[in-house]
Image (cartoon, rainbow, N blue to C red; front, side):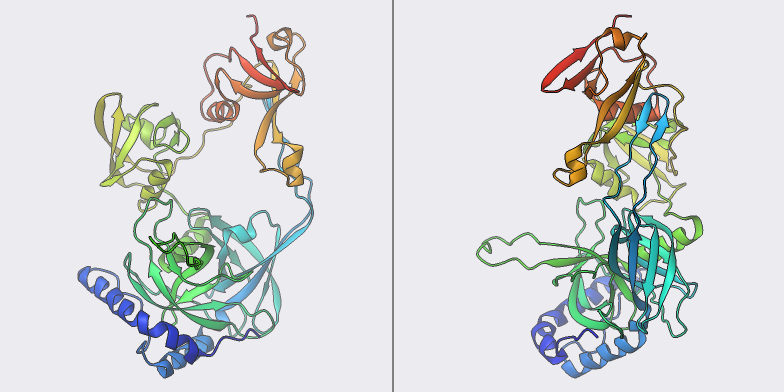
Length: 460
């Protein structure tokens, strides 16, 4: 069983500074008005070590049975290549069987457990180990990348507990929290006392993080963070090194653990259990890189129906200014399908505002034409990436050539690596073809052949 440090030693260091933060958290919720959600319970008198120790024991008795360990197993499988008209998608193969352990916890009597999306990605089989040492298989229901959550289902133990949402902690407010990590051996989880702070609104894709000044142990991703009443404040999804304060460059920086809020966890669980995903309100646009410039509109999307055009720059969604693709994603996380929102855009020198009815924007059917007629392109990975010597960025190569086609006469050769198509990056051209094929075939290709760059221009 994992041993926790003596609580009186922890409280003597943490309680004095945190009691004022607890008071400010409650005051922030009270100032929000009578309709605001209740602030999470801060627990017993934070400055009294005996009360905190009593609360910790109570949490371990009532909430620890909800915590378990998930083992995600990825088998070595040979995924087939996906062949489309003029295009082959070669998936990145597994380097061999892999096994990952992460912490998880129950959130419903139906056997729904939550862990992190990173822990289950690519896995094909899941086992859950409970505090009593028993092991059961689990089934992945789905996940949500923005919240970094995954939901599995298994048969809960007879004495299993579930965790409920603790309520709202205002941005910038702080409170006490208890981190429950799964035990390394058979036995109940141990609670670790910490202070937790709600992040200020930022330009991140997800700006509702909570964070605590503690390091996450190996396998600790997925651990629940609880309020003083034993309800869920958030789930640990990763760690970061906070920016050093001015003049503090001579002192080592402490790592912080990031938590997705309990309310977002519960929303994701409900939707994933119901439809296999979290339904997202979308504009239905492909943005140009990291900017908010509209590179392409999905056919029939909310943006297209509202009159947005390619080349428009989105500057505001509702009352929130946006400048980057992350800003757009962050702003839409707060919206639901069917909601109408004002979208301000810059179109040349003009400023235009359009009303957009948000919806789930699905990709259109796969195209029936080749992206480069007369060629079969393969999207794969370099050998160095497969060995782990380089990031696994896909490349585009010529796999087959129509011997009677224009590209054969232009000198194209199998194995040529395609860098650009009609002056644009090759993968971007293929992404655009996936959404809306061009009316005319491309006129030029820039390829790498060994150490040489070759421009191919067919005669029509």
